[in-house]
Image: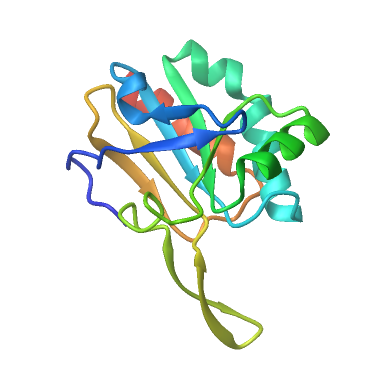
Length: 155
């Protein structure tokens, strides 16, 4: 994962409407980038629902929540519609953001190793620097932990 205090790598990815969204668009805000493996899987769905449920609180603290996975824009649109998600979801099939942000790596599941998305989160400060990171995240309750950290850091 990324070190606290470093300038976050710049990027542009497409959202669920195939509109290009660049990180610079959110300059001056706190940005929660959460990286997840796959739309409509149990853990990823739970995490997206929890972030959406708390989005108003994040917004009240001057933060935007963005989920990133290798899924297509179309998959994201269906995922958002099915679960009434309110967070921004970005598509990164080429891993242009997953890799530099340290969210693509070796994973172990059922004793087998393979490359994949490591469920993780990076909190960026309003000046675009890494404020905090979480790796190998457990989906349940994670959004609330990120919100608690944001409250401490923005106080």
